[in-house]
Image 1: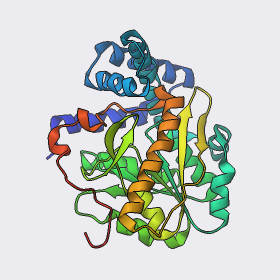
Image 2: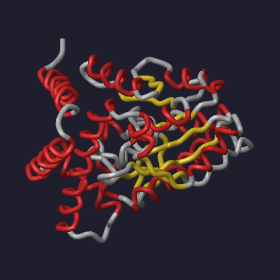
Image 3: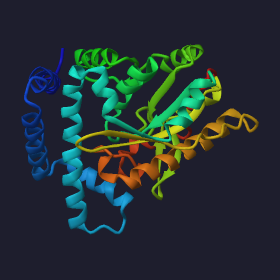
Image 4: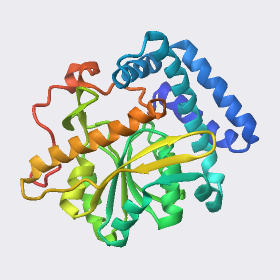
Length: 312
């Protein structure tokens, strides 16, 4: 039986999809802009955490500057949701026209080499729009989504993303999602995996903006195990375009042992993600605690990280 909060979450998202997509564009974005300012003025837990996260990225920022950054960040976060609700009605041509790339050729070379590509991204810009672009332009993208409550909300998001040409697996407790990703490797498609937030409590420890956090092992492990090229794609957006900058490929050293390699690769991913977030800090939609010092200590006690080995 779903809780009242789960019911409200499902009702809210459903109302968004049913209403926002049929509103005039200017009215839709103006409405979400007002909602963003209301949320910012209420200064709830998410806004306060957003400012704590920004303080790591811009350590010299004053309290007032962080406050102004969080207002801009909330505007961009709510714009992301307005984009999401309206994206299913965008034509393939419109999706292609509203994405701008830097260094896309690096990823295309990996695709052309028939190796497969693993692209690690952060919760920045509009990753759904970029995923839709890959679905239209390159025949598909494989990704993993968080399991939401209630379950029918998860299914709604899965239907939405699959409708955009994305092949989505759900991260559910007890299911071997990583094994399924490896099994899909012969398709030699693009894996687009969120790499900045660990949901398992057993992510890889990395240094990120001068503090320790944990990040998922999946992107590094998948590149190591399948031979795919490994990249970071840094994302941001404005009121006209979604942007993606493909970073230089991360070399995968298979001579040093799997666990050590995955740790080094995940740190390299963290460094490239940090470069993108530092360039566009208010495009990073991280309203949750990320660094270990901000987390409940029950999430920090795991003594070792899970390298997604079949022997675990």
